[in-house]
Image (cartoon, rainbow, N blue to C red):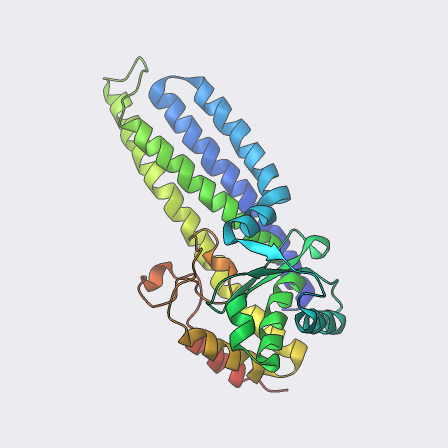
Length: 294
């Protein structure tokens, strides 16, 4: 698979994900409109899903940065970091992204934005403190690969859409227990619709999480490989991942909706089910990097 094929694939995935979000929310609206005999619920669901797709496309990166507590830094505040990013961008043929710092001792990083013009690379203060220059280049090259592969839009939109699917489903699930007001509330058909609505509300956020997991695990391996090709030194990233994995404490500001963005699991210690870890095991990533040949 060529880089351009992967870029096109990520663009298609973005549109599929946004369409899927619209279908899920409208379907939820239809189910509960039938349960409560109120077409207003369906109209609201349609308008809400369209607005959220628009909102997630244009503003999801700003939401991610705000949730993460990231702040922009200028060249004079971190000149060495700026030079590393600038040199790697020149090598990769990418535009210089904005650089943000997250004040957190946990070593981690992520990339976000709609496209190259709006791209952002955010790294923690802990990453700057714990990695040497070669290792930092490895991490930055990994994040720039996310930008070059055009999966930053996809992964950033997931934050907003997955979060809203969970919120809306939770709202409908709670609301269903208050009782409906439709004419067929006490009928068998009404009872079946109520049960179906509750099941739908439970499954919707689970489906959203599974989409998040499927997309993010694959893209990490690709970004590792692309980053290693960029620096021509896979050991830099492999060594960085080893150091990152040794830090067991979670980040101070973490959110399950944004966890897939980071280069490593931000929840730290292995106190979370592997089913819900958005990253492939670091051991497998290190092994793949050290088996690369140039």
